[in-house]
Length: 151
Image 1 (cartoon, helix red, strand yellow):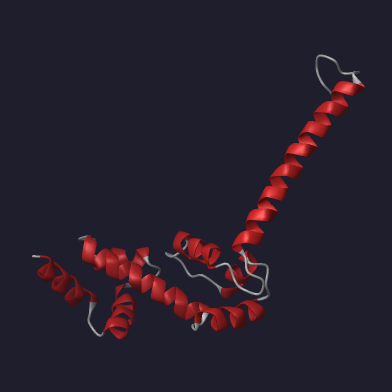
Image 2: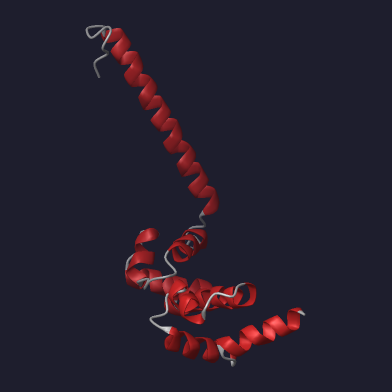
């Protein structure tokens, strides 16, 4: 690292380099300490998984993507996830999609086709099928019942 005003001042260069290294080391130590507090050995950090799902809920999410977030192979992730949550990753994602859609139906007038797209369903028909299977009521009827219950 050369300093522009004193390019040949080796003491200044050394001091600048040491300051940068110390700052980076302190930052890394803080990151490691916070990870150790949050993470229980052998457990998947669900905050990381939930944040990723929420950010990408409008598209297909692969198990390999989620596994990569927590530095596991797909098969290790799948087994740990199912053991930890009692659901497969795909079923967990579907539940999050449907809960989000349920909330949108209750709190907005957004058309069903837009809700379907927003929560990652290929079309309104796929959304209606999944929602009806999940709650035993169609999205349109659910919305009407929610609005009727609010009055």
